Image: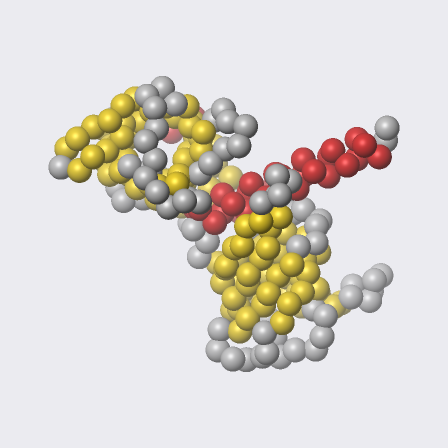
Length: 221
């Protein structure tokens, strides 16, 4: 599962405004992991984590995302500067299959671009979105077909006011008509998603679920 050179996404386990860091697994010795110095995803600057910092780690293999918790044990110098993390063991890793990604019914802006000039680029909104794909409104007749690959740029608004833009290659898996609403829709499956991109989509899904739950509680007051 863990392979040398694999990208890992780190996130503090306890933080009011958690940041994400990307790094590579350089070496592994039994229950120890050695990574290169993490890079802050937002600032693209090297981050120095304090010994004892507890982290959540996300990694991706095929269509599955794996999660586990770790702790910073210190720095290590062997050819290149590294940081040492504890590895809890395979039994403490949580595996999330692609089909387990929760689809959230929410409208976000998305731009659809062809990869080979098959149609004119257009903008639309989603009906739902998950870490594995999305259902998008087809708001005008276009030359798009099942199994076509397109470039999709989603705007993901967070509760804290931040906006994230994620640029993905997606596969059109279905085009269908909703008889109840009269809407034309098409389903997208995200392809070649990096661990960092998958983590962002998971964070957005969780963030939107929390927002919907809060709204439901307020409406019942």
